[in-house]
Length: 477
Ligand SMILES: Cc1cc2nc3c(=O)[nH]c(=O)nc-3n(C[C@H](O)[C@H](O)[C@H](O)COP(=O)(O)O)c2cc1C
Ligand SMILES: [Mn+2]
Image 1 (spheres, rainbow, N blue to C red):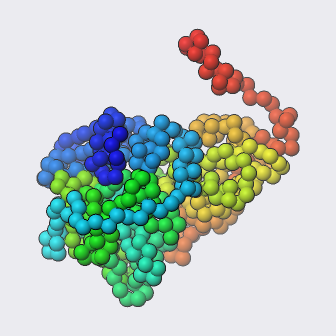
Image 2: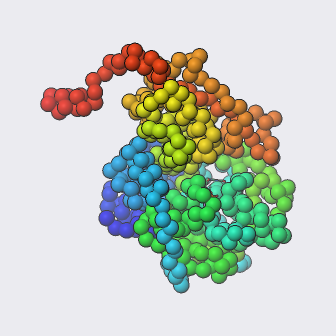
Image 3: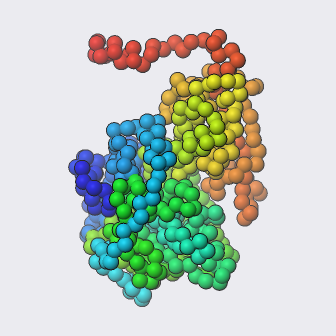
């Protein structure tokens, strides 16, 4: 298998695996977004689009790239034969063993094959699909990485924030409150200065995966991407910003975020977001970027990773559940056998499931309480379910069966009020939305067999899987 350190090597790998479908002449307005959604629903191949009407034939868009473990594995150094909770476990182990792989400083590189400077800058020269039918503008940045340097700490950050074209040389960059790029912007603004920024729009797959992960502030996402791909990310110094630009990227934009007050920030959105709804158009929330220069490879490829209505997603599994799993163990919850989410973005999301092997009375409630409050479980959480370890937590039918049959409702349900919420929480009443942030409530569901009389709980009326596998082998049904 070839290396996967840039988008083109990755495309070759996908092609060798029979995991890529090419389309020529698809309509950017109607077809690309719908095909991406349908392919994600079917867990179909990655889609590579070219020959858009009114654009140079070689300008391309790729989407539905990370939808399966088989395709995401080679991009993050995980065995692509693994699936479900086994893949998540391997990922959790890899995450825990993280060692930074410093970037490789280079001069020049493929991304510098073409450029537009100052008044030549024209973002409309790149094909951008309408990802969801009610999107408020062309979202050029979905599978992107926004590169900033914190003016106080000097730390480089790469984050995926949605990026909308405002006009030919202005973008909106929706870095939400508390995100690392936003903190850098606010610190620069406090000092009355613009924040230099660069955005990569198509890059090695590991750079995107690192950019969209909720990593701690001291982790440099380029170094994390180097760890994922097993080799340093080559970066060149940006002429306009001095920032490290991935030299083998497809397109990199350089410019600055002016020190604009919130109330002056222009309209952005709506946009179809990961919980499966459009977020409203917002005014006065989203910083803008004045674009000074665009670099791009010959026949550049934009990586599209639009959020989709669940269970479709831009990711194969809830990778963020690995972080919650780690946090549960760090908080001292023993015998956690797996963590999952059914509605997820970078975090396990509003329907989180934990499997434990019960060891003592109160063990399951303790797991619920920690999951509802731990950083990775709190943000965007809503329902937290704990089940015994015979339940297949990646299978919603099995989880519902456990809730339906094992939860003793009077003892097993709790509501916790006023927990840290995501801006994407659709059910938050308008009067509870505040510029100072939001909170929402959590439902804790104990769907484990009640510990104190567990030995009297009726046995499950199904043969063990191994027994069935063996007999099936013999009789071939
Ligand atoms: C397609 C996509 C779009 C995203 N859009 C946003 C966004 O608009 N604003 C935001 O704050 N986070 C967004 N995220 C989530 C961030 O990438 C994620 O929280 C990441 O950890 C942020 O990096 P940071 O922790 O370095 O700030 C998006 C993620 C993906 C994959
Ligand atoms: Mn970060």
